[in-house]
Image 1: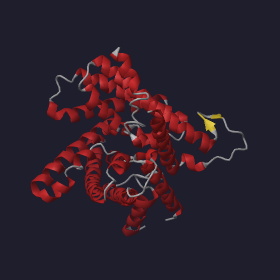
Image 2: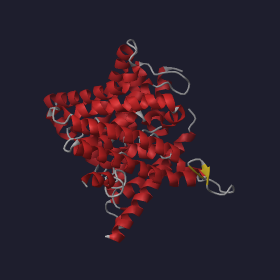
Image 3: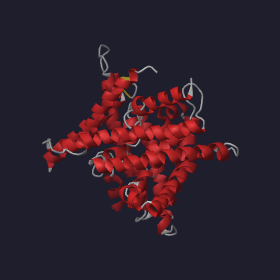
Length: 200
Length: 197
């Protein structure tokens, strides 16, 4: 398969078929917590895409060139979470210094990303052998991070759009907040299940 | 007295899933069967108890500015222990929980208790808090998975409870069922709270 075809398959699978939020259950805290308003959902989504791409690339390099040669793969969880924490801190400082406007809109979300399990999840998934026994190469791992981030942002924005409208509806008191959010997410997951049938 | 109070508050009054609403990812992903739920709950409880005790012990020598990275390292160390022990002695459970064992590191409940409780309280109370919160988490997982396993598979912890003729609602153990079950349970709990207050 040529590269573009592979990329297309990967994009469809990361965004629709194996969506991080709706089918892998990763990154649910921001999905439910930051989806009340469209603006904040957009900011969070962009920050997640950025950090997931960087984290995929760096964690992959650390795993292949530091942990594997020295036989330290059992430390991967520890190494990855520290890398992600340091990366988030670093990104925060760079953005604050060089792009104050961007910092103003993303700043509050950046510290939250350290504990977003989607970021650690994609780093671990990138080094886990796939169903056919092959592992991602560096480029594929990075792209997987980017596309999974896009998938996350896509459903986050959809959720925010629905919840903004739902705020105007008169719900029973016991259904307000998380309860209705969960049922909404379930309906979305049901809709996304339709993509499972895609044969690519 | 306070030991007992800290121990029992996590079960119902401050249940991490239904009341504080933390740690959604493992709740939804590992509640497909009661066995998975208990395995996940026990793994998280172990990490929670150990990290709470450890963080409470070192709270006076931890510089305030880097306390979060310190917590994360402590938690990640215990998670690696659980990961390896489970891989060696319970390979089947380890396989079905998969990615969610290493992801205990970023479970908000554990970091949340470290920051909100173990950081400010003595070792004994932190131990009690860890056990209580861990059991509360396990209890919530078992409740969610009970509904999902009975509806989706007709069994409870592997034992058949529905008659043979029961046609399982497969949706309950798939991803959408997880969200809908938890949403309905939360609504039911809110309703009960309204009634009794």
